[in-house]
Structures are given as structure tokens and as C-alpha cells.
Length: 323
Length: 294
Image (cartoon, rainbow over all chains, first blue to last red; front, side, top):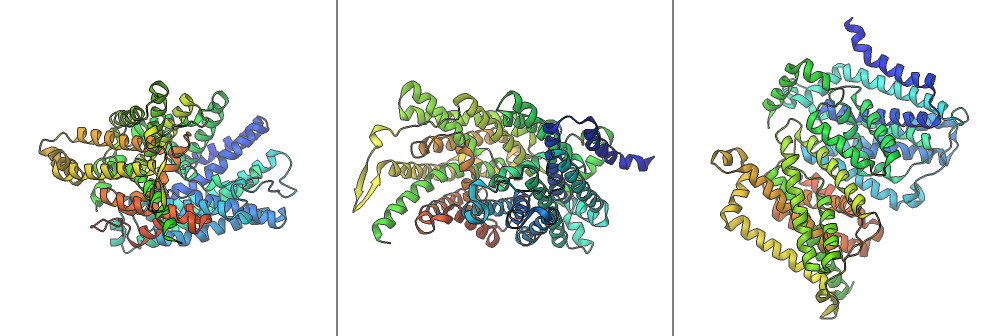
């Protein structure tokens, strides 16, 4: 019985995203849900750092954007045949960049880490405007072609994204539940004790940083194929902020929360956007409500009522770790 | 480069620096006293500009607009502090929630500005007495730039006097050192925090009005200015008032001379300065205590 409960989110995940094809709500909504799963991957990858390891990166747009730009530029430079390979290369590229940025940023803690990640992301954002021949400047890259099998009909690309995202999320899920995941979780709660246990906080954080960047890059590459266009806004700081928003709204203490957050954010933009152009106002209000009333996010609501003890234990540990 | 270009560029950089200082000193004051990184500070800058614009439609007087912009932004700031920010102080993972909440206020306030005043460009003109320029040796210096520099230095002197010479100022500094102890000694700490938040956001509003005649007034102005002031605060050290002055002068001059020497990299240069400072001396140039490192 317990086993089924552990897999329940997966069942809901498959039923929802595959059930959508059965319902077949039309191309517009399939396109919308494609965005949800791609953003979902981006947010889940980000949450490995944020919710699990306790590192507030404010520069994750960098890895998302690098993945997208590498995929887009490779397709433009060669042919779209190897599109799938290029997404992988985009993810590898993002991981490569993140290794060096992680080396520098992880030496800092708290707000200093946050600001340094922001600075690197903004630096690359600024550079994409200047390297016009390479990145297309503020026009971005348009008309990124997809291979024969994936083009024509948004459903095909939806299924492809769903498959890629599911594999990525499964890997992240296994990582989260592995001994390494447990170490990351403890780093958030009490880095000192991890050091006393003979484990290296810095190295483990760096691993988490690179893994997170890899999957964020994969999400970026997928997005490049969805609309066939990318633009420098993908690297700008609001994109980094969106990762924090999605993870918090959905529940940063849960694994699937960020996907729910991505759904809420995209859904709000869609629904409110129909009636008024002031949808970011509404997102602001939702964020305020979440921060004030449901700090554990939508999926975390149950937790407060269910096991308050857990909650208290964790804050206690945080207090003890004080530096 | 001859001395004239250098001087002209230096003065233009100094006026940019003073505007940055007015914004980032508020930001750093809030961080030092209230312990909040107010990501929405640019929105108060924006509110100041639009309040001034609205009042100037009625009275057509720059000085009334300047006052209204500063006071209006300050009042909105205090309301937000009392109703919202106060509720998340001291929460676990406070940093992330602050970031989120102030981010939410960027979305809300900027959209409200769009809703009320529309997205088209607005203009606020310089007061008649500050139009034109005068000769400094062989360099032409706009009067308005000098005015901004003077206002900046007046704020510096006033803040120095207030923070170091008056009892209230000492209480404010004490609250940034040890909030709990100050409360135990019978000071109304929450009120100090609200007032500091109000004053700081008013300074942001003031900067917004002062900058308006030099730049175009659009709803995107707040987002543009917040990153630069963040950089200033980081360079000078979080919560360090004099650090904000030094940081503002560095960034102002880097922007001013950067456009002259490496025009294609001018916007990127400030991020490079911030990265170098964070890697070499993460606690900021003027901080004494080493913090933020492992």
C-alpha cells in the first residue's frame, strides 16, 4: 500500500499528460501544455538546488538560455536531422558552463551566492546582445527547423517533449532519492554536520549545481524546438525569477511541486491574459498569497495539516545550525 | 583623451553616480536595518516619477512634483512594509521569501503604473531655473547635472549628520547591529523599521523624479534601474551606507567612461566589476568583517 502511495504522483503525472491526448482539446491547448511540461522540467531541475540543497540561485536563466541557444545555433549551422543530439549537446554545454560558474559562486553563501549567480547570468545576457553575428542580438534566432519526424502538427512535438521530460524527471527523481540526494537534503538542513560526517559540502553542492544546470539546459533546448524561435529574454533575470516562482508556488519541499507551479503560472498567464493584459499583476497577487498563507506551496498544504512535527523539526535544525 | 573630454565625462559620470547613490543608499539602508533585500526598490523609483508627473499635470511646478514623488513613494513603501513585509521577518529560508515577495511587488506595482498611466512615453521637463549650461574652464557643464550632484552631496552630509550625531540616528544604527537587544531596552523596533523603510523608499522616489528629465519616463524604468543599484550595493557591501557612495561613484564612472572607450561592452562592464568584487572581496569594498564566505 505504501508503495502505491509513493508512486501516486507518477500515476497522476502520466494520467494527466497522456490523458490530454485522449481528450484532445485542440492545438492551442496542446501547445500550452507543452510549455507547461518544458517549464516543469526547468523548475524541477532548479528545485534540486533550491528546495533540496537550499541554494537560492538567481541565475538559472543562464543555463536554460545556453541550452536553448546551443540547440538553436547548431540547428541553424547544420541541418535539423540531429535535433535530438543537439538538445543533448545544449544540456552538456549548460553543464560545462555551470561547472566553472559553480566553482566560483559556491565559494560564497546566502545572499552573496544569489547575487553572484545573478551577475553571471546578466553578464551573458548582456553579451548575447553584443555578439550579433553569433546570437542574432535582440532578434534572437528565428525559424529553427525540426527534423521530419517531429514537424507538422503540435501533437508530435508534444509527445517528443513529454518523452524527453519524463526521462529527465525520472533521472532527477532517482537522484533525489539516492544517497547523494539525501546528502544534498542534509546540506540544506545542516551543512556543519555534513562536514563533521566527513563529506565535502562544496563538492556535493557543485555536483548538484552541474546536474541542475544540465537539465535546465535540456529544457531550454526543448523550448527552442517548440516555437522554433529563441530570444535573449530567455537569459534575462525574470526568467531566473520564474524558476523560483514556479518552485515556490508548487511547493519547493516536494518533488512534483515545481511542475504544478509551472502549470499554475502558465495557466494564469493564459486565462488572465484572455481578459486583460495585466496578467503579471495577477501573478504578483498569487505569489503574495502563496508567500503569506501557503509558504510550503500548493503541494505542501497537506503537509502542514498532516505532520506538523516534521515541519518543526526542520526549523529547529535550521536554528541549531546558525553560523 | 584630452583633459576637457575627461572632465566632461567625469562630471556626467558623477551625476549618474549621485542618482544611483540616492537609490542604492535606500536599498542598503533597508538591508542594514530591516534586513530585507528589497528587489522592488526600482518600483518605488518608478512610482516617484509617476506621482511627480501626475502632480505636475495639476500644478506645473517641478518642486511640488519632486516633493510629491518622494513623499508618495515613501507612503506606499510604509504601507507595504506594515501590511506585508512585516509578516515574513524571521521565517526559515527568509531570503528566498523576501526575494519572492519583493518580486511580486515589482509585478504588481509596475502593472498598476501601466494600468493607471498607460505605456506611452511621458516627459517631465527641467525647471526653468536649471535649464542650460555654464562654462567650467573650457568644458560646458549642464546646470541640471550639477544640481543632481549637489543634491546627492546634501543627502550624504545630512545622512552622515543624522546617523552619527543624533540619538535617533544612533538608534537606527543600533537596530542594524542587534535588533533584539534594542527591543529589550525599550525601543519600538518595528516602528523604526517602518520609518526607515519609508525614508528609503522616499529616497528612491526622489531619485526617480530627479532622473526623469534626463531619461524617458516609461513603466520599464524601474526594472532597468534596480539591477544597477543592486550592483552598487554589492560592491559597497550590503548595509554599508558609505559603501553605497563608493559603489555608486565607481559604477557611475564605469558607465560614463565605458561608453567612451569600449562602447559595445559598456553595459556588460558593470557586471564584470560586480563579479570581480564578489570573487575577491564578497563582503564589499568597505566592509570590515568577512562574511558570506565558506
